[in-house]
Image (cartoon, rainbow, N blue to C red; front, top):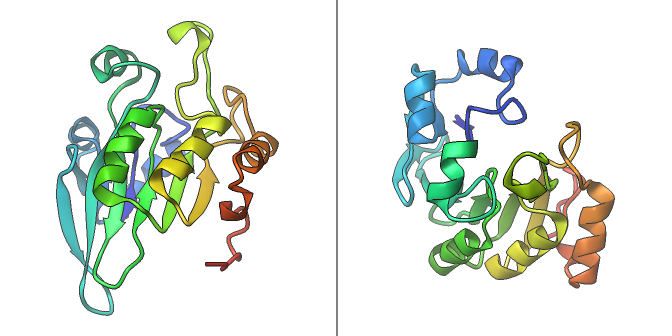
Length: 199
């Protein structure tokens, strides 16, 4: 299974990612993305859920969550940057995981926290990507300070930041994230090393 925030920008789905999807039985993404991708892609609207069987028995529920790929109201942003989805993963006896997708809205994070908070792990897309010609150069995804705010709103026990390097339009990197989480008193929640198993 693949969780795909959106299919329209190469920093989320590049050519090699598209090739990979051909061998994936299920890709969960936006409703529009599912229509464009076809095959094993399925779109999830806001708050729509799907139950999937776990290999060891039981199920995991994946819920589509609101996300806005830029500053402002969804109806103003989506015609410019496209539709985006986030995800919650839940199940009996399992930790709650939030995957933000390319979201720039703390209001959306507040809605999600009301339904799913506190979360055990928040995978937050960050990097403050900007284009001067879009939204007066405002970030299209969370900046570092907003990522720290999102972690606090969600009551996240651990935060795995992603989407903050390797592309020229990212304007904030790892040092900015660490500084912002440190300033917010949340540095102990950051998990930058995949082998870090602290609870």
